[in-house]
Length: 246
Image (cartoon, rainbow, N blue to C red; front, side, top):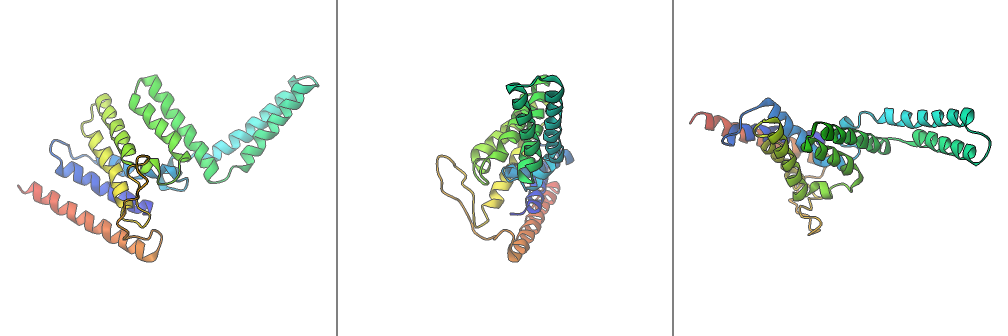
């Protein structure tokens, strides 16, 4: 399913959580969190909507490698005497420069996501926010997994919900786990409607659960996705309005 459809379903799910779950405050921030969470499972795909947003530093990563190579070359030229160390320095400088120049698209974005995740891990350690460090680890690891593998499992959903629970404990924002977990689960449920399906219980089972209604990327699939989003939105709206009247 397309990222835009996942986002729409996640936002609608956030409305459902805020409007229908007892004790959970209706919150625009919570709805936004559900939308964000609905895209998190696709961090395993370098071209996903969220990967592109979190990997915004990809061009800086490429140039960082190039500049590191130039800096190392300058240091080697001016500081190291003739000999094996000098040759090794120029070789390393060339390697850094070539790596930076060769990085394109997905590879640069993956490395940018590692830097983004590492930043979150360090911030979590500094402020003693375990949830932030776990979130950073998730962002670091997910891009290097096969698409629709471990990030599309019930275990990843539980981990994401637990991160929300820890954030709730730290920030005192009631409902974080509900919004985060429901948004993440909405992604897996939506992908279960595609022909590829979802292997919910990897690695315990390789069985792909599917209700193959949607062929992602096809004209008919796109129309069906829009219809599902509209139908789901109307259903949630009806339930929320009905609950408000009683």
